[in-house]
Image 1 (spheres, rainbow, N blue to C red):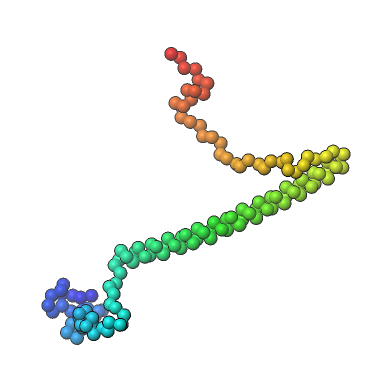
Image 2: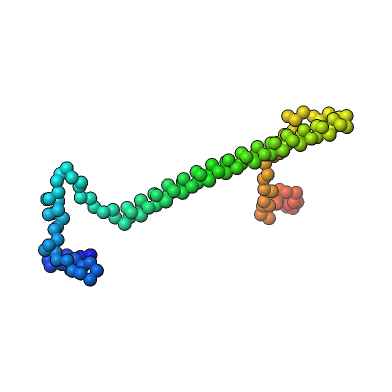
Amino acid sequence: MRAGGGKKHGRYYLGDNVIDTASTPTLSQIRARTVSGGPSIRQRPTATQALQAQLEEERMRWEQLEATLAQQVQKQVQEVQAQMQTQVQDMYTYFQAQFAAMGHQLPPHSTWAPRPPISSPPMPGSAGSNAGAGAVVQD
């Protein structure tokens, strides 16, 4: 931290010690000593740039987590579907044996349609939307 607000005899304060600015080289002196083939002097990233980089890293981590979670969910769904398919096949075989014991024949397995997806019941509308639902409107 430089104390003195840019004044001619400002000092650098680190902890409780004072570093003399006369013995500290300026940036122009450091640049003059730097070889052109060497590493260049770069400015530090600003706080905004650091925060943006941090947010970008966080976003990448979230995307990786979401992708991993999606893969795990897909794997579990496939396992459950395979288990259900096995159970349906076992039940069909059991019923086929039971019907054969009674002297009847079970319809072919392919005629069984899959269950429709579970959906939520329709939500009731507002009281104003009931006009066309059998209510008698008198003129």
